[in-house]
Length: 183
Ligand code: ADP
Image (cartoon, rainbow, N blue to C red):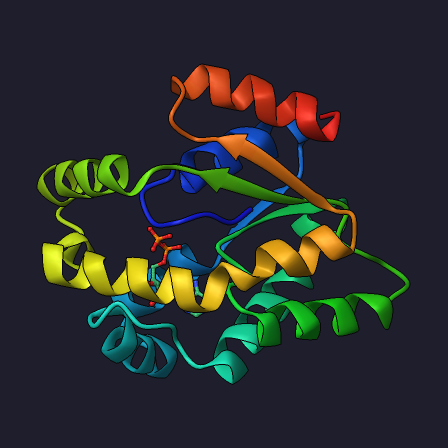
């Protein structure tokens, strides 16, 4: 599941994982857990997250692949926020093909810039996420355009892309999502 910050992918990924009874694996949550418990990974990740930049691929890929190896992911998973660039997407494909598995769908949650900015301001107030502060949110949007948008072509070429309108009411997005991937 991918989309710009504020598109609602976290909310929808959790709902989908519950409905499909599979694991929900969110790279941002894994980083925030590590920041919270002050691990070495967390301290490293924080320096990038605080600026709105991507955490380096090597540590990100290792962290997510390790998480995918845990028992609760054996029956499947929704990946939320990973992959976020082509290097990560290729590493994921490689790792999965080594196991005779593959990503079934890549869901893109779309939302206009104006609405994203509105939501991020609201979230900064409600949840106090430091990276939702305006300057950092701007950088995250820039990084999204530059590094994550190319995944649209990547997954379109694989025939796996499903586009969803993230500006509809939340329940509506969930229904569209489940319909798009037959969940
Ligand atoms: P959002 O999608 O709203 O930006 P996330 O919780 O998905 O929020 O990500 C928060 C931050 O965590 C990102 O800005 C980035 O610094 C880091 N991060 C999350 N996923 C990745 C990833 N796949 N690769 C590199 N950094 C990531």
